[in-house]
Image 1 (cartoon, rainbow, N blue to C red):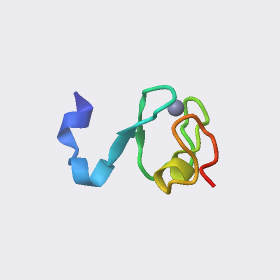
Image 2 (image 1 turned 120 degrees about the horizontal axis):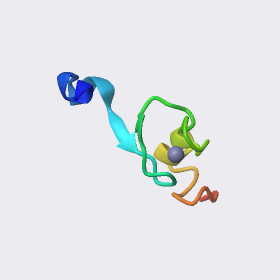
Image 3 (image 1 turned 45 degrees about the vertical axis):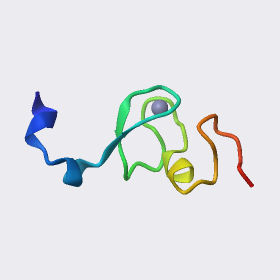
Image 4 (image 1 turned 180 degrees about the vertical axis):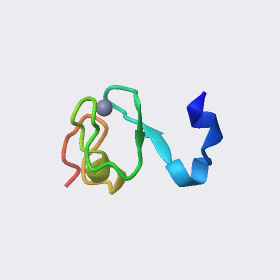
Length: 53
Ligand SMILES: [Zn+2]
Protein backbone atom coordinates (compact mmCIF):
# COMPACT_ATOMS: atom_id res chain seq x y z
CA UNK A 1 0.00 0.00 0.00
CA UNK A 2 1.02 3.54 -0.67
CA UNK A 3 0.64 4.44 2.98
CA UNK A 4 3.40 2.04 4.00
CA UNK A 5 5.94 4.00 2.00
CA UNK A 6 5.39 7.06 4.11
CA UNK A 7 6.95 7.56 7.49
CA UNK A 8 4.47 7.56 10.32
CA UNK A 9 6.08 10.62 11.83
CA UNK A 10 5.51 12.62 8.67
CA UNK A 11 1.94 11.67 8.01
CA UNK A 12 0.71 11.50 11.59
CA UNK A 13 -2.53 9.84 10.69
CA UNK A 14 -5.17 9.41 13.32
CA UNK A 15 -8.48 7.64 13.24
CA UNK A 16 -11.49 9.89 13.27
CA UNK A 17 -13.57 8.93 16.32
CA UNK A 18 -16.81 9.57 14.49
CA UNK A 19 -16.44 7.86 11.11
CA UNK A 20 -13.35 5.74 11.94
CA UNK A 21 -11.50 6.71 8.80
CA UNK A 22 -7.83 7.64 8.83
CA UNK A 23 -7.25 11.34 8.50
CA UNK A 24 -4.14 13.49 8.61
CA UNK A 25 -3.58 14.88 12.08
CA UNK A 26 -3.16 18.37 10.67
CA UNK A 27 -6.71 18.35 9.37
CA UNK A 28 -8.86 20.95 11.06
CA UNK A 29 -11.95 18.93 10.26
CA UNK A 30 -12.43 15.39 9.07
CA UNK A 31 -12.80 15.45 5.25
CA UNK A 32 -15.20 12.52 5.43
CA UNK A 33 -17.69 13.50 8.10
CA UNK A 34 -16.84 17.05 9.09
CA UNK A 35 -15.87 16.15 12.64
CA UNK A 36 -13.76 18.81 14.35
CA UNK A 37 -10.44 16.96 14.46
CA UNK A 38 -8.41 19.92 15.64
CA UNK A 39 -10.83 20.84 18.40
CA UNK A 40 -10.93 17.21 19.51
CA UNK A 41 -7.12 16.91 19.61
CA UNK A 42 -6.95 20.05 21.68
CA UNK A 43 -9.52 18.67 24.07
CA UNK A 44 -12.18 21.24 23.33
CA UNK A 45 -14.72 18.64 22.29
CA UNK A 46 -15.08 14.96 23.07
CA UNK A 47 -15.37 12.15 20.51
CA UNK A 48 -19.09 12.83 20.24
CA UNK A 49 -18.48 16.43 19.29
CA UNK A 50 -19.71 17.78 22.59
CA UNK A 51 -17.98 20.70 24.19
CA UNK A 52 -15.87 19.76 27.20
CA UNK A 53 -15.98 23.23 28.62
ZN1 LIG B 1 -14.66 11.55 10.29
